[in-house]
Length: 509
Ligand code: GAP
Image (cartoon, rainbow, N blue to C red; front, side, top):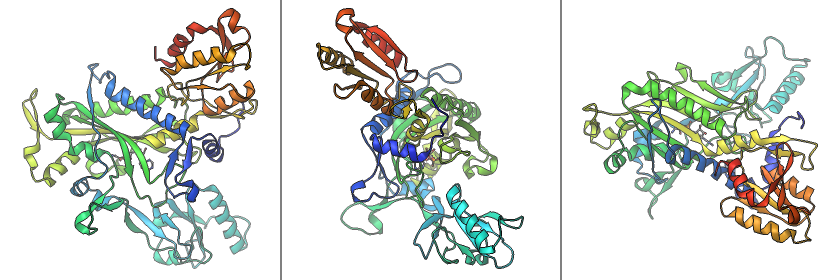
């Protein structure tokens, strides 16, 4: 193995080449901020969502006191009554500051732009997208050429675009502009996609595509309490699509306009908020590690008080589970947020639907009526899949593929391959029998074409942890060779033991 760095370009190229992720509607030139998953990517993302659902909803999960906790699932619509988004605050406040370039017609998130130059006087300034090292280098070179200096000095500063004045904006050259002064003043832009329900396209028929799955859960809180046997503390979970008209979708699938969330709203008595918040934060961090994000690239970051949403200011806390992606490095990008949302959402919906205090939950055990507080672990399935891809990607010049995808076996799109070494001596028939047997339970690859080296190389790129090869010895000894993806070790296993051997390794026995 080598220490060659992982670059995002290499990871994106592998995703395209091996069918993990494609641009949406690629044959028409794609569409910015939308991505399709190919066969391997679909299997990877499904493994991630299934693991989440299974570990959160289906399997026994023990809470902080060691007692099992109740979490039930819902599957709500993408389009909801538009009043939902007034109550949740999204209609009024789900905004990003946006800047247009009048010359290049590009649009930028104002809070993603930084400006380089001398703020004093009437010198020219250069704007570029923060974190884009090439753009920063270009801006620095342009500044030096313009001012006829070798390197920026102490009076050249970097300043957030949102912090510069109108005069400074007029002197500022946009990232894709040739003349200064083309960037507009930042203005708020609502991120919700709009559509219309029914034949008439007027204000009355307007609706939104949900920007988060959470509000479907909140709006159904009372239905779930009335129709199932859950009692506080309990959770409601949902996996589904969310849509945000991001001003600058970027970094592959990281910031998309259509993406999937895996959200839990966990309802609790207000006095237990600190305990539950800490428990969820730590359990969720451990969960990401358990599916393969074991490197130092995963971190837990507690928010500072001034970062918190208004309803969370006096709460138990908010933290982000973050991953150091190649495009954020040395910084991190958010995979999941764990937030104590207090009773904000339930009281908002109770008030906006007109029933108010009558909607308070009755806690029989405490003989008390109250609006439950909520701890919300909210994860992104696409960001999760992207982190798994980045973590797995391991350059290895000693292998024919030049790379091996070291997925955790639970996440691997293909669990094992079955190969006859040659097309002779009944090997294909034995291999096919074994393939069919394993296929009853797992996603298995069968391939009898090409050299064995090429077949192994394909499985290294797909991240398949085990390859079983039927060879000249199989007929006489009743054993096959197992090749381990990560160590390249080979061992022999009795063919009739292979299903159990594989189940034990995959934890599916
Ligand atoms: N209900 C809370 C909520 O939606 P959020 O931090 O806005 O919180 C939760 O989103 C998660 O959804 C993020 O941690 C991220 O993984 C994912 N996510 C948010 N915006 C995204 C985008 N534009 N593209 C891909 N994933 C996104």
